[in-house]
Image (cartoon, rainbow, N blue to C red):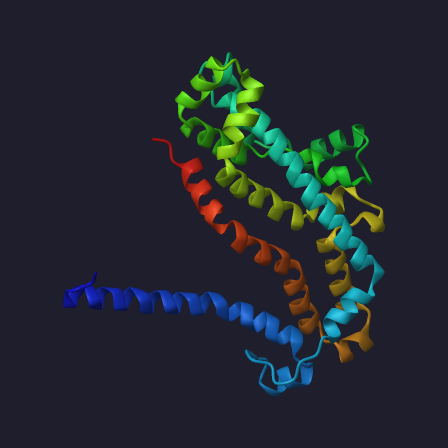
Amino acid sequence: MVTSWSEKVYLTFVYALLAVVGAVAVFPLLYVVSVSLTPYEDVMRNGGFMIVPENITFAAYKLFFADSLLMNAYKVTLFVTVVGTAVNLLLTTLMAYPLSKRYLPGRTWVLMLVVFTMLFNGGVVPTYLIVKATGLINSVWAMIVPSAVAAFNLLIMKTFFEHLPDAMDEAARVDGAGETRILWSVALPVSMPIFATIGLFYAVGHWNTFFPAIMYINDATLHPLQVVLKAILTRSMETDVQLEEVLPTETLQMAAVVMTALPMVVVYPFIQKYFTQGALLGSVKG
């Protein structure tokens, strides 16, 4: 319990500072949501500053959902995010777990190659030629396969596995379990924190996929959400004057921000506990 006067002053200062920081973080979010729901006339009447909307309209959202390409883009993005994250976690786990074992032959050389990919990049053109040679052009797999394993995430997961007690492996081997059985029956059940952490990293990356789509996908029906939203905003700014009069570009932009950020914002609170624990355990070795 806090008894001394100095401790009370200190806690009051800390809580006040946290309240200010929280307000600074929440303010942009409230502004974006409010502008996306407020008629443009009200926004201009308040000098472009709007926190609590007086009149609410969903015209910008109706415009987005009325576009068939947008709904198709949601399906593509959802597929890439779910399937891509599953592939990422599977391949990253199958590579990180063996590398966490010091007795693995050639372990040092493999780790050096992994770190090398973090320092040097093959470039856009060689990567495109490889994707083209493997027949992935105009395929949703072009947004999944080239980034199947991220070196940074691999090292974090490897470090987490190194923290697991050796006694668990030894007990499983005494019972006759092999390496594969130890991985799936012993290591994975206690690895939820790192899976939540790495899974969130991969999922956010897939949800925000943009450059792989514009480089490898020419078919508009296979474009993900980010590319379609960019096309809608560009079309409204450059060509559609009538649309600008009804729904100005700023309103469309704020609605686009809400639509793209909402899924991740909804998912994060459910895995925040595991995310924080996994990030700490996977980053510090000792």
